[in-house]
Every structure is written in structure tokens, then in C-alpha cells.
Image (cartoon, rainbow, N blue to C red; front, side, top):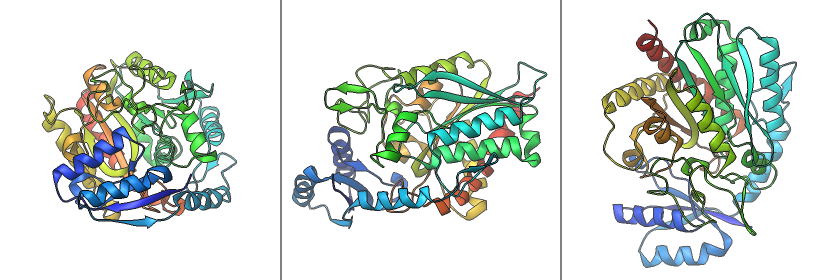
Length: 394
């Protein structure tokens, strides 16, 4: 299916809301940066909707232009270039390419075998298509009451930079001796790929697949896992349309991936002090809540810590990340892992970290730009670690 990428310039809040409605109820896909940036929206539209979409924009006097005629062709070229780069050689992982599910699993096994005193590889469930859901637990031992920093990535299949970021964090914490202090008093649970079925499908078939791969009906597959958590489910920014990119599922926790992830978090909730879910491509740091503009009771703490993280990231390459809750930075959303972790699991420091996009103004950040992103973000991870250690280690 030929998809075009449009650049649309909404000038009023009403026009933005209309575009958000179209995204939730139909099969268009907004690839915008955060709302604070005041930049144009990049919107992916499939061929069968393009005529109606253009007519709607014209009727609303909303200026637009086509910036990519055939997004799939560019995605195919990206995939071919990525496949040419060597993956893992003698346990050494490359950050010059995006790794497939099997390669990620291989690296996790390598870490657990090479560093058995600090690394435990755990299978916390299986996906709809029976792939292992894997988590790395980093612990130096000696104290079962140490605080835990919990990180997951790859909830949305097409956001390839997110698993790459999680793998880089693992590499730095485990294989870089300069960061040894970061694992001495704080334990870590890191999930590089929370939606392996969708991720593999985005590599083999549809580069811009976002959801899981569960069968919903005879001709529809997939649920948006980050709208599937049981906290204000289906309230805002989620769709009942089975074909929508933000379809929230037939019920909360309908997906084995979200059920398994929530169970792992709940099992460790008494020790988890900070939760971080890595996404792309909005370039921002978001804290609860998504469904209301009202800040939680520790909103000042959440905001100030996120600002400190942003400052550390900015110092590396000069890139700015917007900070706030979802309504102020993006739009109202509900059923996210971030809000569920805060509102149900009771973890007071809960964030979504949206990494930058690139390429054709979307998720196809070129492989040769991976290292620059993951390195700057690790500077922010250091701030999160320092804060948790100072606040929770006695």
C-alpha cells in the first residue's frame, strides 16, 4: 500500500484537535514533534484515505504539502542498508545498526553468561506469537532492599531507536567499568523489547507497524499496547476503531505483552523507585498524568527532575527535549504504562522518554545517527540514577 507523508500546518487549537480526532478514529498517523515545538505536523496517510484527507484539509483551509510520495520505498531502502551492517561479533554489539529480535536475545544471553555475578536473564512471559519476553536484572548482591530503576523499551514496534537505547544502557552499565558505581547501590531491571512480535513485523513486512500482532478479527490485527493498561483505559487519546494505530484493545490488559509487563512491575513494585518507558519520536520527557492537565501530588518533583535530566542531555549535543505531562507537551492520552505505573503500581517517579526522530521526518532515524542519540540520553540516565541513589539509599 502506497503511503504519502504530508506536512500540515495547523494554526489553531481546534485544527490540532481535528487532526488528533482523525488519528484516533481513522488510519492516519501523526508523526509530529511535541506540541510545544510549534513545528508543522508530519502525517502518514494510506492511499485509500488520501483523497478524503486532502479534501478535508482544503475545506478547513488548512495548508499542507506532500513531502514524501512513497514512504514505503524509503523504508525498504533503510532496511536494506541496515541489513548490510554486521550485528554482534564475539559478544560486541554494534550501535551502527538496528538489531533484530534474535540478535537482541543473543546479546542478552551473552551478558548473562559473561557477567553471571551481576546479570540475570529472566523470561517474564511469552508474546502472542510465542516469542520470549526477556528482562535483564542487574544486581551486585548484598542487599535485597536496594532501590530498583525499571526501564522498558520497544512497546511500540516501529520505534527502533528505543530498543537500541535500552541496549546501550545495558552495555554502559555492565561492560563499561567507568559506570561501575551505577550498579553498586541501585539495582536495575531493563527490558529492551517489550513488543517483539510487532517489532519483527516492522522489520519484515510493515516498517511503520506500531501495535502488537494479536488477532482482533478476521481482517484486523494488533492493539496499541501503550493504550492497553488498566488505568483510565479508553478515556482519552485511544480509539475503539480496530484499524486505528491507537486502538486500545477489547478490554484492558487484553494483550499477553501488557499483562506480563504489568505483572513483573507489580512483583517488584515495593523496590522500584523510578520507572522509565522509552519511545520515539517526539523528543520530550513526560510524566503523569496523560488524561488530565492536573499534576499529581509530587508534580513539582517530577518536573524538576525531568528538567535536570533534560539539561544533562542538552549538554552533550545541544539538543532540547520538552518537559511536562502529556496534555501540555503532546495531547491527552490514557491507558499508558507510565500512568498505570504511577496510579496503580504506586511508583512515584514514572516517566516516558521520547527520543528524536529523523530520516523522512519520522521513525526512520538513520543507523549512523544511533550512537549520537543513545550517548546523549545516557547522560540523562546518570541523573536519574544519581537522584534515586541520593533519595533512597540509606
